[in-house]
Amino acid sequence: MEKLAGDMLEMILGSPQGRLTERVTKYLVTQILVALRYLHLRSIVHCDLKPENVLLSVAQQFPQIKLCDFGFARIIGDKSFRRSLVGTPAYLAPEVLKNRGYNRGIDMWSVGVILYVSLSGTFPFNEEEDIAEQIENAEFMYPSDPWDNISEDAIHLITHLLQVRLRNRFSVERSLNHIWMQDYICWCDLRRLEATLSNESRFLTANADDARWERYREKWNSEIDAERMNRVSDQTSYKLPTWKELAWRTDIIF
Picture (cartoon, rainbow, N blue to C red):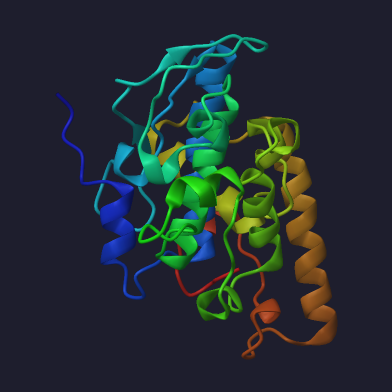
């Protein structure tokens, strides 16, 4: 059996601020979404997605993740629905609690909760009150501490994952293509992981994206040169390295 180094919840609780940075969260959640895409294309729904079921390959800031505990997993087609009660209460989707038919959308609700927990270190729903009613009505807030320091794009993605109506809830593909997920530094971090695991396999990024991100990097750096802002306090002053040069540098935070 492969030896792993803990889970995502331990990583969140063990971080200096009790929550993860946006950079690390994007890196981990991208891997979760890619894994879900693989499962959903095969009509497999995890049904119990939570940080404790996201295992880490190494005890470092940028590990490979692996999903575990498929005890509640179900085979559910694209237009099929199930009704059996599955999952962990704090991560359950509204349709499960209401005993309505559910499909792969319940995994996407769980991704929204994972995002919220990762970025804030707290649950979106108050477990000391009637959590079922809160979930069924998507009654949650973004308190100023810490959400004032978290990007609007991240909040936008979470809000569109924690949607009561299935038709309004973001899918795997829509989440992966969201502006918050489409991030050059995250792409570099994922390329580094792919290169570490294999020189040939591209299972997290696509060859077709290479030229797009290289054009983005060149445009960014040319603008920095033009403004002569190579190294000041504002984060936009950083010149972007290539993914091979980045080497998971933590001094660059986007």
